[in-house]
Length: 380
Image 1 (tube, helix red, strand yellow):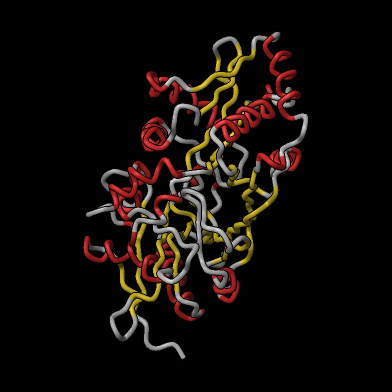
Image 2 (cartoon, rainbow, N blue to C red):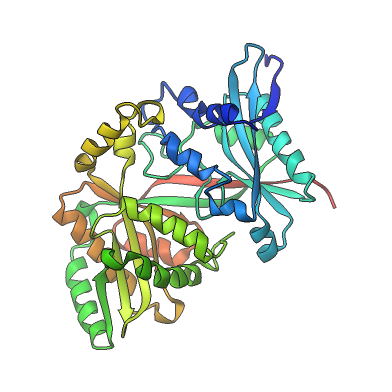
C-alpha cells in the first residue's frame, strides 16, 4: 500500500541537484542503466544557458515519501513555439522516473497536468525532454542492452504506469541495429555506381570541414529544418538553438562523423553519427566527473566500439536518386575500417515508411522501440 506522498517543486539549487540525480538511485541495481552526466543534465535544465528557456518554461517536481526519500520525479514543459506552429493546446511532460507504483506516478502526472492547465492547455504528451530535438519517449522493447548516447532508458513497467493513468499511445519510434555482418552483399558496389552517376550530375560527397565548423553548421541548419519539417512535433531550430546544439555536437564528433552531400557547392543532404559515449559513461559512477570521472572519460573513448547514427536527411527535391544509400554506405565503410561492432540508427518514426524501408534494405533490424503518450487533461 502506498504511504503518504508529498509532491514538491524542485525550485532551488539543492532540490534541482536531487532531481537530476534521482535516476542514479532508482536504477542503481540495473546492469543496463547508463548514468547521464550530471553536468550535461544541469546544462539542459539551466534557464540561464539553454536557449529553450528564451521562450519556453518548465516546472520540475519530486515525489517524497514519509521517510523523506525521493520516490519519483517529473517535469511539466510549456513550449510556446510548439503552440504557435501546431495550435493544438498541448503541453508536455518529461524527465519522468518513478517507482513501480501507479499512485505515485498518478500524483506526479496530475501535478504536471495541473501546472499545464493553469497555462490554458488541454492535452499533455510525453515524455519529451524538452523538445522533439531532445530525448523523447519511453523504452518499450529492448531492455537487454544499454541505451545509446542520448537515448532513453527505463524499467519495463513505465508503460503500464502511463496506461493505468489513462494515457493513450501516440507515436512509436524505432532503433535499428546496422551490423557490418548483415549489410547487403552488393552494398559497396551499388554505392560506387550511384556515386559515379551522381557525380555526372554535379552531386558529390565530402566530410565536414572541422576548421570551418561554424560555417558548415549554418548551411546544415537550413537543410536540417527543411528535411524534418513534416515529422511529428518538429520545431524548427533558430540560429541560437542550432548554434548551441552544434557546439555540443562538435565536442562529441570525430573527423568522419558528419558526411555531406552537395550539388555544385550547395548542401542537399547529410548524415551525422557520434561515438557511443554511453559505453564510457556507464563506468562513471552516479554521473559525476569529479574526482575521477574526467579520467575515465578521457581514457575510455578509445575503447568505444559502436556509433549512433543520429540523423540523416536529403532535401525533398533530391530524394529518390540514391543519395541516402551512398551516405549510409560511407558510414558502413567507416564502421568497417575502424573495426567497430555496429551502428545504431535512432530515432526512426513508425510512420516514416521511406526510412524504415531503407533501414531494412540495409540489413538493419529493430532492436529497441520507444513510445510517446497523450492524455486529455482539460475538457472543452
